[in-house]
Length: 186
Image 1 (cartoon, rainbow, N blue to C red):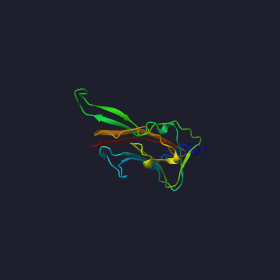
Image 2 (cartoon, helix red, strand yellow):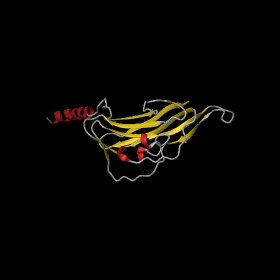
Image 3 (cartoon, helix red, strand yellow):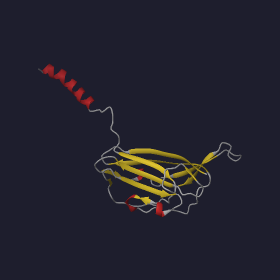
Image 4 (cartoon, one colour):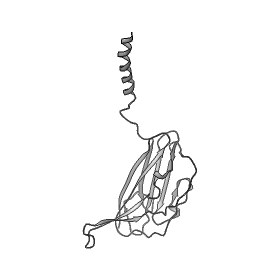
């Protein structure tokens, strides 16, 4: 009997150990979307000179139950929606280049003592900012205030918006995404 236990026990341990690994991990319960919108609220990557550009960012809960997430330093609010201009080659810059233009908002340090935020079942959290600082077109979850500095419309040229984002969740692995959208002002 003892020999039987010594031969079967390692086999059972191996079966249990390998059965705990799921070869296919399920989709993350939260989807993150980022897009640029034109003055009429339609997705676009081509804008007319003088037209406002809206930066639309959403965290969408796909579950039938609420999800808790944390607004911490990894959320990267300060660098969110950073716009860069692509400079074509010229006599001053033979290889062209990239120039950071900035963000549509003026980052301010805001203190929030909540331990976490609840994203309701099938709900979403939205951040929408206006390049020209139009508060009527601006939306920030939890009614946080967006601070804008005086910003001129972008001049004609090729641009891109790029930033990284990490979101920490209570019960799920963290989301890490790098966002980039190339766009043009005509």
